[in-house]
Amino acid sequence: MSEPGTAAEADPPSYPTAQAPDRQRDVDATGLRIRVYEWGDPEAPPILFAHGGFDFARTYDVFAPLVAGAGFRVVSWDQRGHGASEHAALYNWDADARDALAVLDTIGRAPIPFLGHSKGGSVLMHLADACPHRVSKLVNIDGLPSRQRHPDVSEHERSKLLASELAGWLDHRRRAAGKQRRAADSLDVLARRRGQMNPRLSFEWLRYLAGIGARRDADGWRWKLDPTLRFGGFGPWRPEWALQRLPALAVPMLGFLASVTEPMGWDTTEEILAPYRPAHAEFLTFPDTGHFLHIERPHEVASRVLEFLAS
Image (cartoon, rainbow, N blue to C red; front, side, top):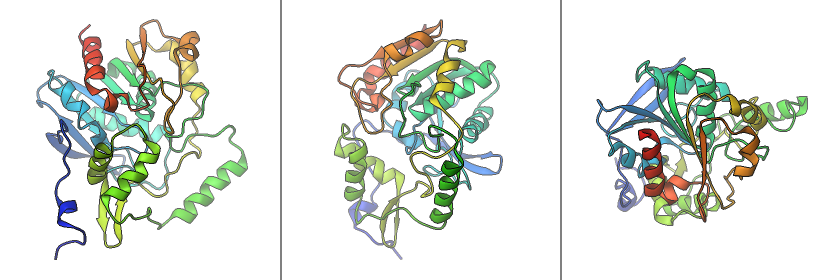
């Protein structure tokens, strides 16, 4: 029996220049199933990509093929609770870093480049700090730390680890158990909801994402995101901790910064980063560009990334 919904919505989504991954597989991360995707020749030099909070790996469907087309094997994964990966009982920063390491271990032991957007950029900075022998170069797309609040970093620590904050998060987790995300009548509705958080991205792109990142249930369409995830919570993680570690980063780094404030953006500037700038770091601010630089300007960002990797 066919699922409810129109025939058009059952068709595979499409978007100009978007390319589905060439391969996908699952990785066991200490008992949790993590979905991994790859673009490019399986024998090409690998590069590890990490997506942002409340996103999923296939938000790279336009950007990853540009890097893979230059001779790389792009490897990314849906973070726990996101996309096609399994949901977890609880979420924290170190668990995301361990999942990244589990994926990295399936690629090989030699150091390789890392690239991450937003929360993914900070997670890979954390991993590069913990395992410097596993990374050769680091690219961070608007995920550099500052003292601003970061709305797309799920389960990060708020201003203080007060007992009331911890109790409030656990109460939320208890209430959310067994719940589902709000359903939408169509992918168009789901895409418009997403547009409230991503106002600079086209409706066509957002609908493409909805067609990949949502599932169709009997009562409508809903994102595959764990309903227990929310903005804020405890981790513990503070941006100041990453900021203080930044000067000790030993590998070459290229950091992209947005110039337009967005709901999911970090609002980090070159001036904020200047006192913490590592010796081998370059920061680039793109004019008139929001938080999703690699989606707004995929060719320009890919060109600069490839120049950095070749240098």
